[in-house]
Figure: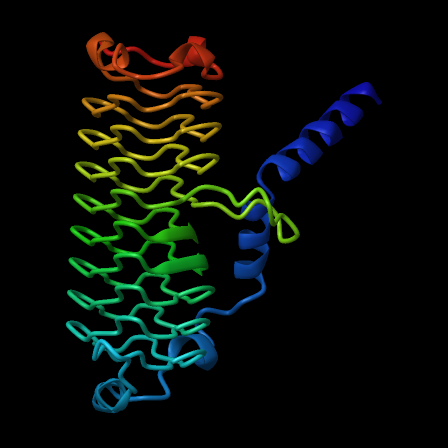
Length: 272
């Protein structure tokens, strides 16, 4: 009886700590990614290009196309410019978006699972509740972007996330703990200088040689993450979970802030 009660309490605690993970998993369980609604496109590349070209211009001459809710999965849209556009709820599952531009675009609740965004630019884009599991973002520019997306298993090797905000919005929790989720993501050689990772989920993330200088890691989850040779100068580790994390050298750790206030530091792995 006591064992069952303890197990129930642990399960409830996990749900309260990571409700966004539960919400994300429930969403994927209820969606058939192979259904026509998710796996097909209602437009051709030529039609997308025409829509982008016909989009209205603002005073600065910048176009902002409206592709809200459009089905654009498994197309080749590489190199296109969606900057400033409304792409909320759009579906880009398995779509090739290599070198495409999404600067300042609204991609809230869009679907980019398995999308190829290699060398794409998403500077200052809005990625709230976006599904980006296993997306390929090697060399992509997400600097200054607002990200509460699920990037679990995504490849961000050499990506630029300087000044990006992946923190939880503690003012609006009606939908659970919306935050950047980078569980098991590959961030080797990525630039996260000055990024806000407060309460972000980086469990088991690969962060070898990543630049985490001046990052806010307040209460972030870095359990099991690999921080080998990472630049942590000025990074704030207040409340950061470091259970089983592989830490960099003592010299690198000496440049951090509030490492003594991290959680489970005694369970972290030290370099040999």
